[in-house]
Length: 491
Image 1 (cartoon, rainbow, N blue to C red):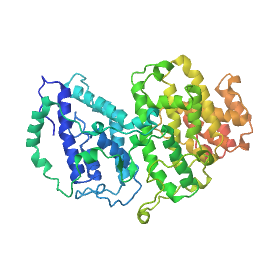
Image 2: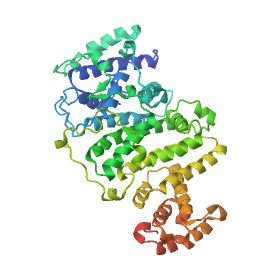
Image 3: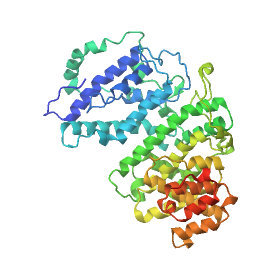
Image 4: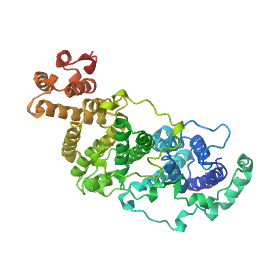
């Protein structure tokens, strides 16, 4: 349902017209159908009317975010279950909600794929307006990550209201309504929950909306890691189910944080510390809080947080949502098979990719800084990460360094530096004393590397990710000294 375009009218007007119309449809689905039906509709119609983007208003999107935390696998609540014939989905509501929010973030992350090359065309200008509006909406949605909201507050009634179109567009909206009445007749009136009730809701299925929680932004990660350790390494099924839900939420948070970084990085600009301090980056602000305004200390604490593995250190972290640690519909919950190595893990193998991504995000923010000040922060951050990784076992170390081909070059460089730093610590080698790569490798070869099972894991990683190391004449000699299955085949 795209409005008829008059080239003489600013595209902002038509964007407002489009969203005013579709927000009425969204409310109709919520009022007369279900949350699942709305998510299904939104997923299908996201870019169906390009250059317009179909997304709901903040109050509705806020409920969808809350839906990502529902732990029931067989919901019977008629506000949540699917009522459209043929729209049932084997995925849980939390999974569907997370997938939809992820699609919004993906659209912003890869917006260039939708540009036709002519930035001055009406279509490109309209899409650019839509993208900026979507970014502002997501920034507001993830505003609960701001430490300024670490205390719960109450919204005034005026803050809960729906968006009212401006008077200049009311007549056009009426014309569109009349033209599309047939499209709305597909909605069967099963029940009626008022629009005001939906827009003023502060919870869904017993779970409080994120903007009402008032929790420290880092508590969400610590709670997720606590559930992963108890559920994956200690066999607690309820914690495992809670982790299965929260890992989706945490990946959403990380992808939003990464989207923030992309917006800073898109023009290859360099920033001073002051510029980043004064920016609106939630992630950077939260790192500074970790370090009590000191970036070095904040990055050190970030490394410790990302690789935390002691349940005792997480004792103070309490459940986030009312539904956490409640196993609903247990008869329908069939756990996925655990990795056989989970018994050897301290971190929880399933949580390692998320932990690694959190650690890498800190490094990406360092790369935004002026080249002159990057060096010291990179060196100290690598040392902090290495120190934490030295405390985990072989199993976790192996999975931490098991990165895919899609890993970016800067991320690989960071991982390579960590690997070398750990080898230095394990073998007592100080690479700064050697003139070149071959001298360093020779020193590693001469060290008693077979005495520590972690060194072969790291050398295997370097052989596959550091071109200088992989092309060295010493790699074959190392292969003869290290178990072949660990190092892999070196051509």
